[in-house]
Amino acid sequence: MPREHATRREDGHHLQADALAAALTHASWLRAYGPTSWDQYDFWANPVGRRAKALYYRHGLRALPVVAPFVVLDTAAPRTRRLFWHRQRFAIADAHYAMGFFALVPHDPRWRGPAEAFVQALVAERCSGQTEYCWGYPFDWETCFGTWGADTPLITSTPYAFEAFEAAYKATMDPRHLEIMQSIARFAHEQVGTAEVAPGVRASAYSPNDRRRVVNASAYRGFLLAAAGSRFDHPEWLADARAALAFVLWSQQDDGSWLYAMDGKDAFIDNFHTCFVLKNLQKAWLVLRDEELRHAIDKGYAFYKSHLLDARGLPVPFARTQRLMLQGRELYDYAEGINLGLLLADADRDAASIAMTLLADVLDRWTLADGHFATRETIFGRNTVPYHRWAQAQMFRALVCAAEGRMG
Image 1: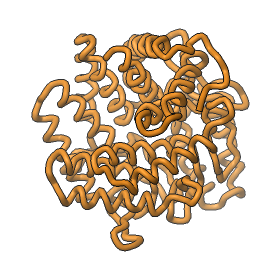
Image 2: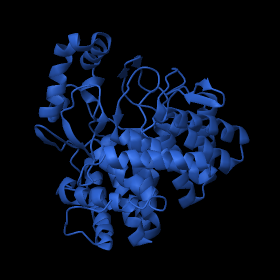
Image 3: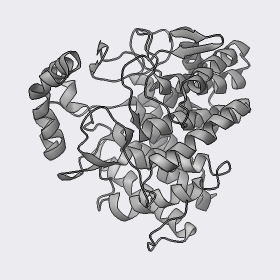
Image 4: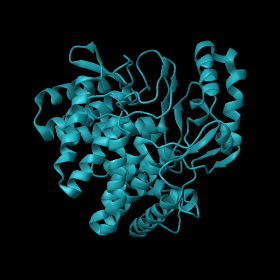
């Protein structure tokens, strides 16, 4: 998909150079700002907001008066979140920062210290009371199925730590990182519940404590077990991976899209969750080389291009939504779109161009003077409060990945 607007960064090499410069500026900002941050869920993590959200899930529009004030504050005055919650550290963010810094190490050894610091933070942040290594959120998460307490292991968080320790092992050859990776895979294989929906098709739960049928959760688990099963020669992990990935394929709609979940709740189609599914399928395909995966990826990315990018090639937050949305664009959509485009560059003729279009817009409009990124655009303007998990860290890694062609 060619860009329909010209910028001063039309040349790909210049884009890569600018991406590297932006990543290094962000690293300087991060050093000063620190590893804790505000978060997208701040208003809903505090007890009052969490109860309001629970009422909304239970009573729908009748509970709108209790959630509306939080929605308005989050959208129109996001800095007021400091009145309700506090900055925290997030494993997903630490994993992305670790991967980004380790990717910089071969080109500048000075980044090894920050990379290892983020990996050590992951060790400290692992879920308490669990035999195997796993990670979740540091806040109570109110869902349409009830409250999931802080420190609940999540299959949507844990694979990022697997990749971070994989990057750490590649850089250091420390066998302890391999041991942690194997522990993560055992957690995914043995403790995350599954439900058979058809012969050989098993939906993966979010955590050991639920039986949801969320599509991206199955995609994450499928990729993790495919990668670990291949690396560590565990055929039972590979078989489990194929069953989880079969559920993702079983869930794909005729138009190539995926609903968020297949359990009667959360039947929306959004941008970055679609990217989550596609990137995990692609990474699993790189291990398994299953042509059914290839077909699903091609079909899913075609949907992404036609429904989740606008005429300028910029991200559309939702293709199908269940409630009124006040945001126009999300940093998360840009970060995942860039990563996905780079990942699919050899598989789809439009992917590299899409990644460059997204990258150019980030560099032109989303990168702020101090080095962090705007978080979202809403009907009230731009939210510039930095959320490491949503998605400062993901964008940092996306910039490093985009710059690697120049550096390598």
